[in-house]
Image (cartoon, rainbow, N blue to C red):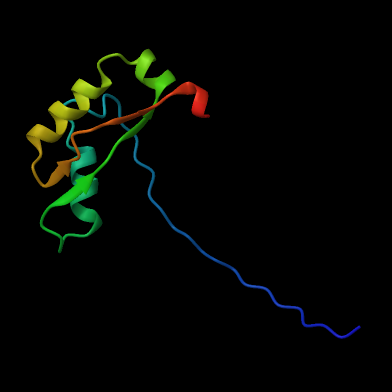
Length: 89
């Protein structure tokens, strides 16, 4: 049987950042990362989708996220943070 054999390689490089208390307003890491993704874009938008189990384990997470993005105006938070119910997993 005649056939062709082909292959390709995809290289993907990325940075790994280490931090704690990501959404404390004093922690500029996430803001710097988002601003530097595409510096030509003046205002970026971000939407958070959170698993219900995570939301239950971190009861103040929504408030922390909103406070963080109130401080850093270069990225606009989509105000409706989506919480995915556990039964949808």
